[in-house]
Length: 111
Length: 113
Image 1 (cartoon, rainbow over the protein chains, first blue to last red):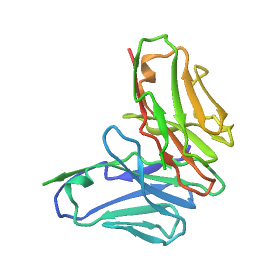
Image 2: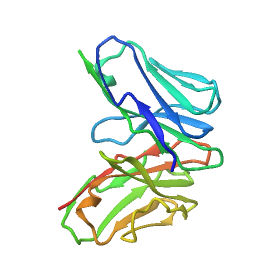
Image 3: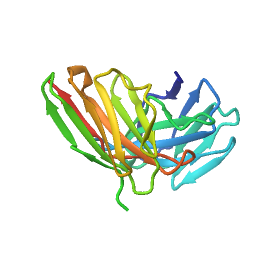
């Protein structure tokens, strides 16, 4: 099946620092999504990307759809304690309905 | 609008017992997905429905697992008999069409002793 490699697996950062994480796939996707999961809750959609090269922001979060269509990036600027959680990338191949999920990046923000 | 609703939120049962997980998708969404999340394997798609019809159940691990969607507002995932390795968090998600994004429920944490 499809393999999504997400890195890094975990990050420990100081409050106020910027964060970058990425996701790569073994095949071409037409959709990239980024989710955040808080403890005891389901993933919540942060940003959706539908076009190669697309750059989309949601507050302090910015995500990009890689031009090769095999990767995506998520940046968080000026991190705050509530950014703590697990961030997942997810992608969908052309013509498919199901999403493939990355293994997640666990973010810890130290006040 | 209410999001995806799942029940129960937590379930503890003994090996060999039947377990039924329930999901109510967002009204108007045509697609419903069941996922399983574990530390070892992350999020795995088990099965998804379109307009109440199962489309792809290739992720269902064994015949012990079954899912139904009798109407547009309700779906069940059943495990019979349950085993300790079934312990995981089970998520239901729904989406409006095949180009839209999926919205997740809060999950059911299943523990099989």
